[in-house]
Length: 159
Image (cartoon, rainbow, N blue to C red; front, side, top):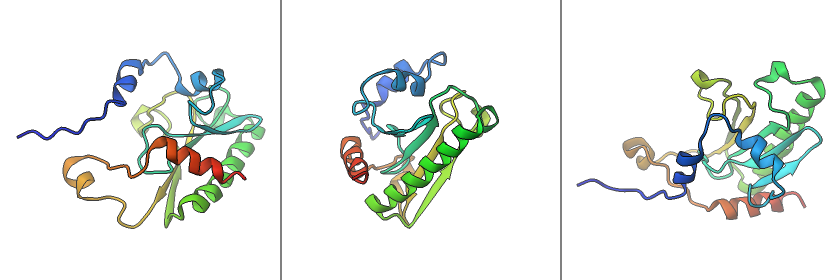
């Protein structure tokens, strides 16, 4: 018997995942930060919730400009980007008390980049035992919290 795990929210990604579009640029151009789960806007960078998270509290920090890697960014962009990463590390710790964090970037398709061409850093809270038999045996991740609730909790750390 075939087991089915229904993930209807993935269809939008499948149908709209066009290579000539950039989700970061698109989200920035819209005046819908709450709908797009944008947590913070600096002068040159922004932080947003990953809508296809590896773990609860997974956010990304990216420059406003569509640039491919750190070498394409100016010093002010890099400095502010890292300040936002530091700030959101503190807020993730406050909201979720993770035992660790994965913080990094995938640059280019061979490195695992899901959004090619627009640099961004991932921040993934981690806990001992946060992978379960579902992940190991059925390649399925169980998310214990909705994106709306995660967004609300992370926003509450700003006050």
